[in-house]
Length: 245
Length: 373
Ligand SMILES: Nc1ncnc2c1ncn2[C@@H]1O[C@H](COP(=O)(O)OP(=O)(O)O)[C@@H](O)[C@H]1O
Ligand SMILES: [Mg+2]
Image (cartoon, rainbow over all chains, first blue to last red; front, top):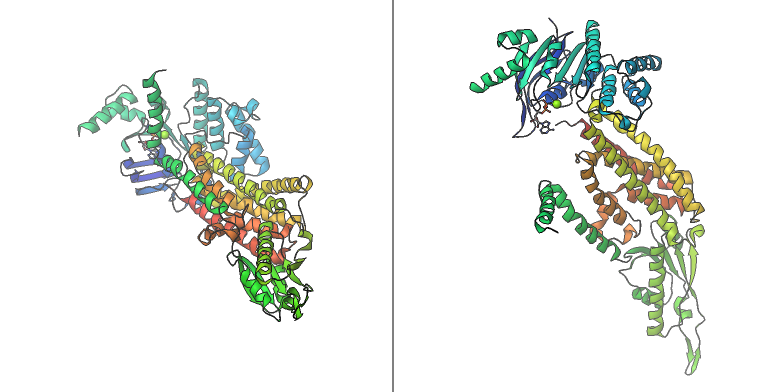
């Protein structure tokens, strides 16, 4: 099997006191919708920034699409779409202007870019707001615009940091449907979330706690293995077990 | 009013400062630095103004005149060639050339023909060839010479010395302080605004996550920095046109040389200021921290780049700080162009230095953007 992401014994220290990743190991098979699930502060964003080449790991091995994110980031950045946890759009620009900017950074031809932007605006339900300044959008709308920007380059690997926070349930369903569609086209999608209930929508998940991956596999498997009702219970059991050791 | 509650508010303020030692340091340091520099800059009057003396006098009186000159105010060097001395003034190397005629002694003192037979001195003129584009330096020269002349009169019973003044830059003969000042204030305004805007923009890029998003795309750090430079260069061009228009139409400032060359220097100034903003932004996590850096840009540029007081008159130990500020070079260059009417064949060193700053600072900015936690 080919892997979109291979991480081995990854350690990230922000300072002497703060170890955000503590020997995390994980493999994401190509073409999956993969969830990185854990509570706030467990190290999800740190992991994702390292994968995107934005942070340097303290120790460990990282391969993304077969590339080293530190040494081969130019090639890597052509292959990934990244949606940061913050909205990360220019507040003073309109939705459309933001999308045009990010599209141009991928050298998408003008005509093609216009088509993609129109398609994505429809998908995130912002057609009527395309000429609104981002600062004047509601929190949920900003989030949707940000997602559209990440989808723009039609990436091989889509990395989404908490894409469903502040998105209402109806739209959330639309999001997941789109992710499934993209996956069918061969895109690998890595999603972080701290909502355990969303995990069931992923084919595979990794549970992360205090910088360590405590379990990996299909959500159902993890639930069965731990003899739990749901993933939340499984998570609690796994962390307690980790604490007992 | 409740003392306990009031103190709680005050305490909170101290606590927030304690958690942010840099703020504390800046709060204490910035005013001290400002006061020190203000004192050193405005406490000095022009000193060591470079002048050349051509003493063609066949007698001894001219030498006595020269000895009477205040040697701290003027830095006097001797020359034997009047034309060469004048050329050095037109080249901007010296502020003035002072030329004593061969009949200076003879015609400044009363002629004693015999007992009781004294003819009043015929009188002669000392020639001053002067650069008036810096009003303060020019004033220092004329004042020192006038004082030396008076001393000569009182000591040697000489007739009042008269001067014949010629101008190295005739069009700037009547240059006012304002004409000199305008270049400084233009550069100051553009530097501070550009640095501030870039600083805030980049702190915003970092804190809002847009910088991370940019860096996850194929765009390179160099493209980001140069993209910003293009934008700020263009904005500076427009600002420069507006400022020059105000200076010309409202203040009627003297414009001898090419406005376009002055404009080029202004654009380079803005680019330098912009990259400095990018560099400083790396040290600030929030907008509020970024603002704390402002005094450290404003005061040095305001005081050391020659806006009010010629760099020439600063204490020697302060001069190096002037020379590492890009605005020092743009202000000097713009004055050369506007007041002296110099063309690119004279101000190319200024252009090159500003360009050099831009390149070196840009490389640093790119490296700064590449740095990861
Ligand atoms: N820039 C930073 N400097 C210092 N510590 C950080 C920084 N970013 C994150 N951390 C710390 O690292 C840990 C993991 O954070 P993060 O990766 O953001 O977790 P998550 O995304 O799962 O909420 C937390 O303890 C957080 O406080
Ligand atoms: Mg996070």
